[in-house]
Image (cartoon, rainbow, N blue to C red):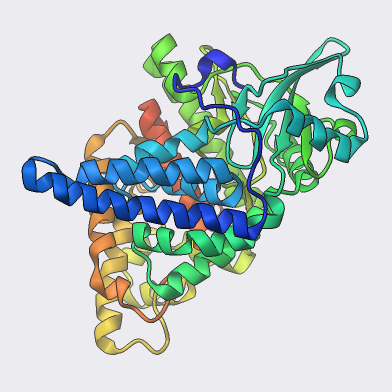
Length: 450
């Protein structure tokens, strides 16, 4: 797990309580809505005096207020902020910059709440279970926080879930729904579809018994991949709300790149290891570590990388797997009948679309596929190519403003696509952060098709 000096410089204040009732949590959202309304009034009043003020100034004020509320609520509310921070081609930059904090650093819980969680789960305090236990969290995120412990000479990382997180998922998502819909430019049907998928995934993510089982199984299955390493997990010191594993040394990408200034060879080795990890999960296991933000990878100067946090794992239904990955085949761009068949299976096109709708969405999704699958269509891909990411950003900006999508009465795309797309676009941006030039065109999918 990451060390204290690897965290961002802005250290949040410790939190002594979390609002847990529906009324308390709804009240926090209402207060935030009032603040945002006030920000608009103040912004446009100031703009009369100072015409140089921009929408970015307003976005920053609103992002600060929204993040403050979500970080105090934690749980699914803060997790949504973390997810949205990865949509760099959709959200205003001020929100991305603020929400990225949820990947590394949220206000930690005070020690009495941590001790209370241990006593509920083990009838003992952490100081009775371990030889040593850090009184302060070394890392705090959306669902839980991590403490360092020692037992019989072993250095351990102990993840403690925040109180009330599991019980408040449904109500939190209802509260955050309008905000997410507006920021991510989704229509009513799409937001309903995706919120249901997010609720299913987050419910699983708060079950640390399930996370331990998945962590052990996927780590073992991927142990053969070069340059990857995983922690060992300890069931006897884990429960539904507490998860204990080996402490992993390493640094998140930002700190690693800044401190070590690694060679291109090291960047490529780390990037290739992470890419191969995702490729193997997608195509051999049909389940994937669906949270590829930089906070879940610990990098070392020798070109190896540790993988942590298997709470968010997307299980891919076999029928959807076939449809989803058929779209990266070159034939999809040359065979119109095959293309339409693939798009119907992926739920991009609907049986009751008018001829005009079918033509419009067919052209639009062809363009989307051309951009999003570009890394697969050559033997290697240089993720340091900023032109590619400019194209992605420009497409995302156009997507957010497209009236045909905003006004559509139907959701375009399957709910299963949400976490698969999140995985791949998160992977792309992580590769871009590393500046990795890697082999991409020998995906296991293509090998299966031969």
